[in-house]
Image 1 (cartoon, rainbow, N blue to C red):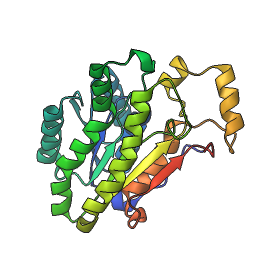
Image 2 (tube, rainbow, N blue to C red):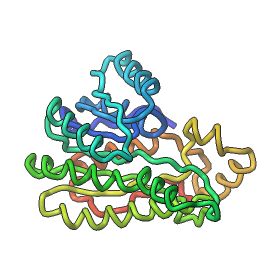
Image 3 (cartoon, rainbow, N blue to C red):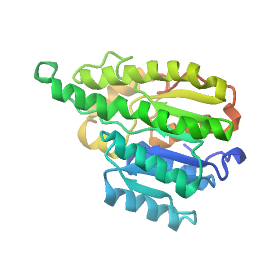
Length: 256
């Protein structure tokens, strides 16, 4: 796999807001949008990891992103963070709703409080981020919103029903908001990752047997990494995808 990325001239100087940008797929988004010459802002709760991401970007010779600590289950805090980005960098015209947590859980043990917390972590903040950026995108003449779903519920994955329900909801949110915002030239798409080999996934879930089964299911016999998702996100954020909206973009090496 090549480490090079296409350069999209239309992305230069755009203001990009990314949730969950301190680690995993989100950190790769932050690094690569910075390399495109955008003004990148991101939120997370992992301050030390965020500092490492910002340091790596500065060492690469790019402008450091604007980072804010933000618990996405606190919607007023998210709204304040988005407002702070607009005040400091200008109107946000690219939103990447990346943050999620695929914590495993047994359906029999789920309480009402846990269910609600999982929806807040994996779905609710996506809608309220869209709601907050839509007016500034409208005023700017358009924008691109990229929501992150999951292959898990398509693949009938068990062991985390609150997560798979939330991620199914992301696709419904994408379709509905694409219709509501299309008249303002705001595009809304959903990226559906396969099993991506982030540090967390490797540490917590990957086994030799699991890896073997995964590659058997995939048409392409190579493990997905974060950069594979970021390449799709960059394209969807750019004008090269200007008439693509309300779509589900599966990046899974042909597993589905």
